[in-house]
Length: 422
Image (cartoon, rainbow, N blue to C red):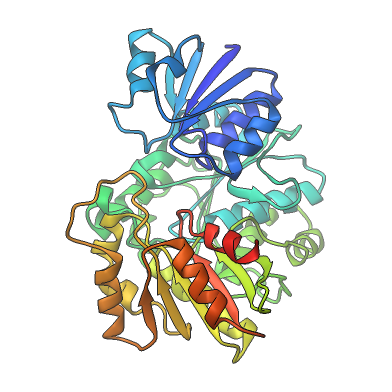
């Protein structure tokens, strides 16, 4: 295969495979609904990027790779099938890549990106030269893909639509299990069953790293044949550069993985304490012209919002904290409306942007205005604004001196930070 076309090339997972193909010298093309930092970076590396989906984009390819978020009637998918071009989803490609590797797969509702990056850094610092596929951009290399020289592959394993079942792991980390992706799983029991299926892929000589006492974990690991390693028993005295109890949990899981792979405790600890984070995970962006600090975070689930704002409150003390939140998906917002309403207690002022639709159509029965009303029943100082320009203008007017602004969400809310820092 010399010409590979990617449908949804701006996605954080799909783009990692695109980078891999570019490094292998293949001709890469791809399309997405909008430009982004990721598509611009791929274009600089030599990928031919098209904005918008059209059947002609897929013509001439030897192989097509698509995001699970692509609808079945995507014109490029339909054209690839018509032309009998081999087609694989991103999870299927991960399965192919992981087949001949010693794969360490990091799963969980929250923390998997950070934990993946931590393990990748530890193995790199230990001289083990792993390949790494992560759901963000690693700060050291400004990429979501690292081509290693060894058989080790550290990969982020997503549970959406049971994607992780395509991976062939030797080590699985389950950071935690929570009520996310209910548009697919339906109930928390459905989520637990998904993780259980994944864990059962391990053989008796393989390893499952988790906290067996964690919520929903015991139900998911009942039938596991592999050796179960309790990461809660790992050291927790790390002096991390990134704040939050949840990141200490992630560090413990990474440390447990390092021990299995025979990395010395000293090397693992030093590596974790030098870990500086990844793109869009409590990332410092800069200061506004009025002196307010701007941070950005990918948190989009109530549990993640609570953890990030709790860490921010601990880190910034009594500084005034603005949280600018963009809900992600209509279904998630509706399913977890009451949980969202209780997630912002550590913020002084909450600013809500419109829901980021992503792969969904507006059902007409849920909105950020409704979320604002529900939030207003739990707290004061909630405002909904219907454009990023209005949000940036509000923050420029209201956020002063040593105030802190955190933009949060899995969509394009980081663009508010761009406006504030221009």
